[in-house]
Length: 78
Image (cartoon, rainbow, N blue to C red):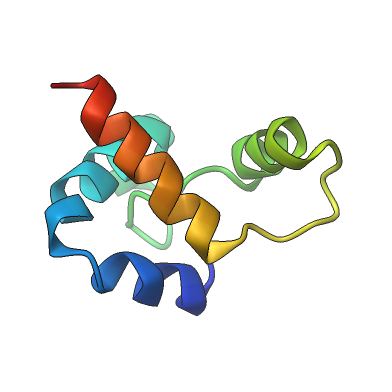
């Protein structure tokens, strides 16, 4: 995830819990046992998500799209 995506989510405090939950859901199993000891999503999973969103994997995640996705996910879980 890019710094711009993190900053985009940081501007929306109501999405922080959803973002953390989403990061946890995408994190590899036993993430705490491997460097860098953070629940960072697998790059292959992120590339697949970007491909399914934009039609090809060469495009970087658009921060505003991440915010829209988190809003959708938050609304869907209510």
